[in-house]
Image 1: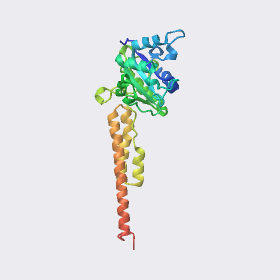
Image 2: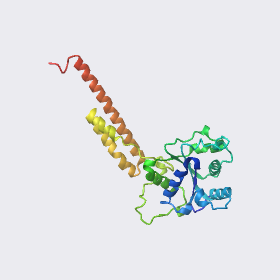
Image 3: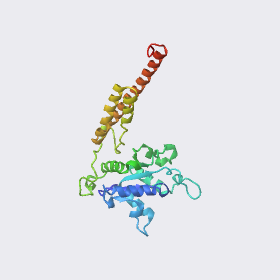
Image 4: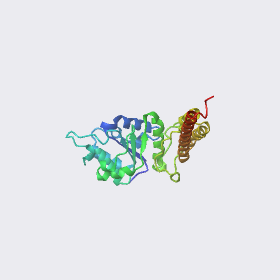
Length: 269
C-alpha cells in the first residue's frame, strides 16, 4: 500500500479551508520535503486526469490530513444538497478511500471547529470520528504544526524522515510522545497552568492555599516542554483545585467574619 517515499496527502474543501490548507502546506515544508506533500494545486499538472492523479497519490500515501473548518459540513452543491452527502464528492471519496485502505487518517481542526458527530457523516466516513484529531489555533500556529509534524514522523517509514533544514536548531525539536504515556499520534495541546487563579486566590482570598496553587502552576510549562504531558495536565488540575479551595476558604472566612460582626462579637467597642 504505502511506499518508502513517505507521502502526506492534504485533504480539504476549497470553500471551507483553502487558506488554512495553503498555510499548513507551506509550514509543513519546514519538516518534510516538498515531494512528500500532496496538495491538488502543487501536484496535479494541467491536462492531468484529476481523479486518476488523486487515486495514484492515495495509493502510495502514508498519511491523510483531513482539514476541517467551520463550514466543512455545511458546504453545498449548486442544487442545494450537502456535498458531504454526495457520493461523488472528492473530499468524501478521498477520506473514504484512505479509511478503506488503512491509511493513517488525522483530522486537523481549525478555528475551534469541533469534530463531526457520526450521525452527521455518511456511513463510510463514520470511522473518521474515532481518529485522534489535532487542533490548529492561529495564536499558536507554528507550535501546533510542529506537534503535528512530530506525530506524522511516527507514522512515516524511518527512511523517509530526514532533517529538511541543515540547521539542527530549526525547527526546534519537541519530544515525541510514546504510546505508553497514554497518547497515540497527536501530541496534546499545552494545558492552561491556571497561574492567574493562583495569584488571585493568594491576593484576595487565602494566602496559604493560593501559594500552593502557584507552586503547582509553575511546574506546568517545564513538564510540558520536557514531554511529560500527563504530569503537566495533573499539575494544571492541582493548581486549579487549590485555587478553588482557597476561594471557598476565603468566602467562608468572610461569611464568618460578617456573622460575628453582626452579632457584636468583633469590631465593636
